[in-house]
Image (cartoon, rainbow, N blue to C red; front, top):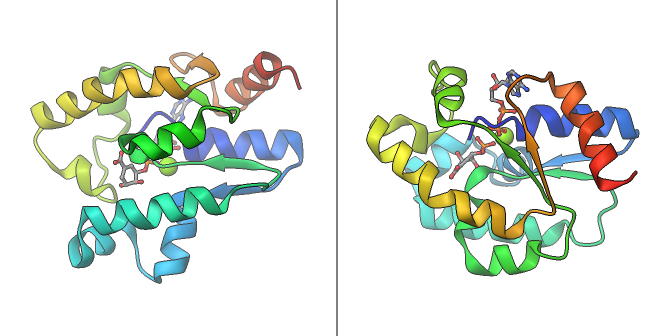
Length: 155
Ligand SMILES: Nc1ncnc2c1ncn2[C@@H]1O[C@H](COP(=O)(O)OP(=O)(O)O)[C@@H](O)[C@H]1O
Ligand SMILES: O=C(O)C1=C[C@@H](OP(=O)(O)O)[C@@H](O)[C@H](O)C1
Ligand SMILES: [Mg+2]
């Protein structure tokens, strides 16, 4: 949440002239309701299953995929991601808090600060485990980050 996956994914797709799938947007289209409503009506476990199915659907898709930050929660998702060109947008906790200070669209962001920080810390090793390249997002614009991703991945 808040590292810039959706924004940088869009910039990367524009630079590379490739299509983009944002998994959250795909899920919202398929479920015909916003993520907040899916969490509220159907629960997180249901969302995680739909998210898993959406991730698998991107197999053989030639383009950019921006995932939600919780995709690495499931071991089967992490296993699926390990041979893909996964980019980890490494962002300090303080910067995430600043970027998302007015956010109401991410259900897990609506909980207490300590719980969110715990979630952030618990997930860091998972991101490191699945990523092929790590990009420091601190001082660059989304377009600059997209260029760095292209350089680091060698195309
Ligand atoms: N490199 C960046 N520098 C400054 N702000 C950014 C950057 N990347 C994203 N943002 C901002 O942070 C917020 C979250 O970005 P978003 O792309 O939705 O993140 P994610 O998809 O990882 O949750 C948005 O308001 C976006 O404009
Ligand atoms: O971290 C998470 O568990 C989630 C992150 C969100 O996506 P972003 O990482 O794009 O905010 C979205 O998939 C959902 O609210 C759950
Ligand atoms: Mg996003």
